Image 1 (cartoon, rainbow, N blue to C red):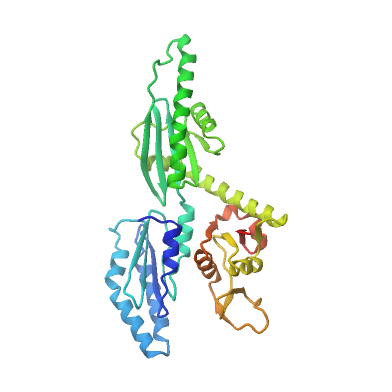
Image 2 (image 1 turned 30 degrees about the vertical axis):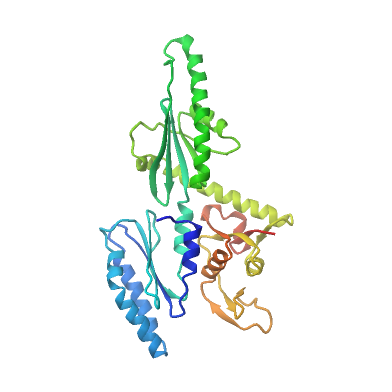
Length: 361
């Protein structure tokens, strides 16, 4: 299954006034089944308290009908570390998603799917390209949402081995030519596979040459020996710390960009109240949220979102305990991007409610 912005937009379009059941489970050691069952029990208790008998019975019947799906979702033998299921009450439609990264464990019943765990999981494991650079060639690995897959190999055909002193310069020139010839394929993959980051792994001198060939791309160089034949997943495991650091750096750079634009009157915004106003107007191009942030507010009859206590005089609002989810939903509906920012990269956002945005105009 392809997990991208289109997938998230399809999810938030899945509306049902009776409710959409959203289930998440992380199949960690010990299993997530008990926690999921407990979360579902809380949902049932809330539904049993509804005054509308027909609605109450319909939703409880739907939850009962989902029992086989719940059992499969929580099955420790099933594939996928992070699993999710979305099931509208009235249509009988079921959407599933599987990632190889944690998504937490929760059960939510709302008129729209609960997507924040999915957004956060996707942000922590955004598509990245890893080029393993060796004298024998370049190996490209696509890494996204916890999965690693070989996507290309280019073999270098060197006409000398550099063993003799007089051949070393010739070998160096040959390697430079080969590495430059590999750069276009990497550039093509960046666009086609939408890599957020590109990491070059191998001998520092070889990765330096390839990094220069890829400019103006700012590829990250990692000096690490990777033997030929090592499975893609093990290559990623060896550089897991560096991958995480790259994500933090990317998030921090984006936050700084938003702050610079906001403080100079450009197309940037900081703070919950101003961002909500621009989100309501459809001007947000990329919404930034602290991944650990929590916000309170409400929704007006016109669908506009307001921070707690900040609705205009006379505007009647319905309280939204999870305003962050509504902000994500609104952003996706308006075809904006959503970025949950790593806690170590929040920076300036922390002084502005953990909220910011890049604007369309």
